[in-house]
Amino acid sequence: MQRIFINKSLCAGCKNCEAACMAEHTTHRSLWLVNLSDPSNKPNNRVALDNSGQPTPIFCQHCDDPACVTACMAGALTKNPETGVVEHNRDKCAGCWMCIMSCPYGMMHTSGVYEDTAAKCDFCAERGTPRCVSSCPTGAITLRTI
Ligand code: SF4
Ligand code: SF4
Image 1 (cartoon, helix red, strand yellow):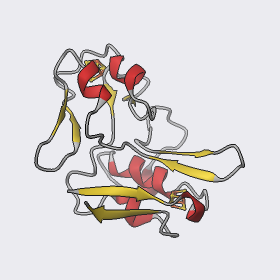
Image 2: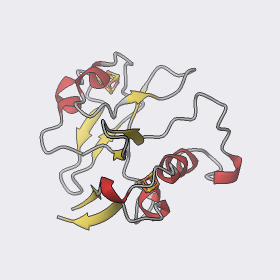
Image 3: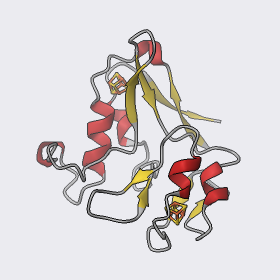
Image 4: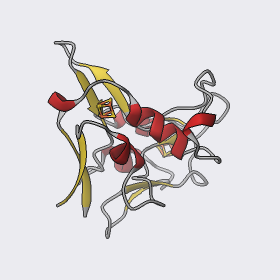
């Protein structure tokens, strides 16, 4: 299984990882065409400042015992036993936001201002390496096999 590891001391706060995530989850997948003024474009990751002002990347941990999966009564969230990725099935999602309230990392979010389903990191299922990882210029987020 592969996981994203975070070394926040290397993070420059450029937010390339957020922009890459937004672009990857549009139909065109182009960074140049992402409308940053459209509030429905949301990254599945986040870079926040810690108490000392250090930029800190925050990503879905695809937890071993995911609170979001336990909280989802619709069966829309499952943990893939082969990849370990916590997957979200939008077709089953009831938009109750129990997952948003239960994630200890704040990584579940609404899919957009005009939609009523949840959204989360899909580990860039169609790519070998998540686009956030390949877009980080400093090595603050890296992919490792565990
Ligand atoms: S918002 Fe969707 S994915 Fe989240 S707990 Fe409710 S039904 Fe499940
Ligand atoms: S791309 Fe890398 S350096 Fe830039 S904000 Fe994201 S984690 Fe930090």
